[in-house]
Amino acid sequence: MAKTGQVEQQWYIVDASDEVLGRLASDIAVVLMGKHRPHYTPHVDCGDFVIVLNAEQVGMTGKKMDDRHYTWYTGYPGLRLESYGDRKKRKPEDLIYHAVRRMLPKNKLAYQMIKKLKIYAGSEHPHTAQQPETLQRTGKKVS
Image 1: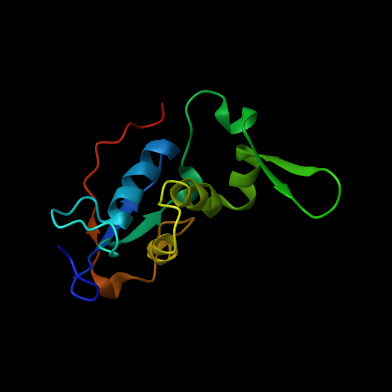
Image 2: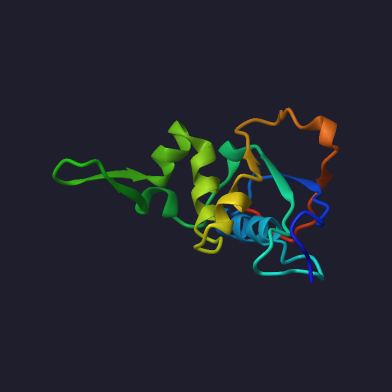
């Protein structure tokens, strides 16, 4: 059983170019929670850091980029709507961030887990000193 402060955390790097958003997010969520480790403990943050590159090139299958929408309430009457495609043009990091955040547990520990996710729209990142390893995935590419 893992104990707080005794888990040695690693850094992984993921290239999101031409990846399916949901499949990518589920793989990232597993690593952030620590479920890929044999000593996974639900009440301890056992997860690792994940760096996501090329967030602007992530995709979805079918016509979901145009058909599905983000909605939010502003405080005024009515809701705001924005399609996934428009959000991808405006804030490409938000697509991956919200998809991963919704796959994490709904508790206070999830805040610590999501802070270990670093998302960048381009292929450059400032975490070379941590010597991240490539995360081994068998994800399906968007065709």
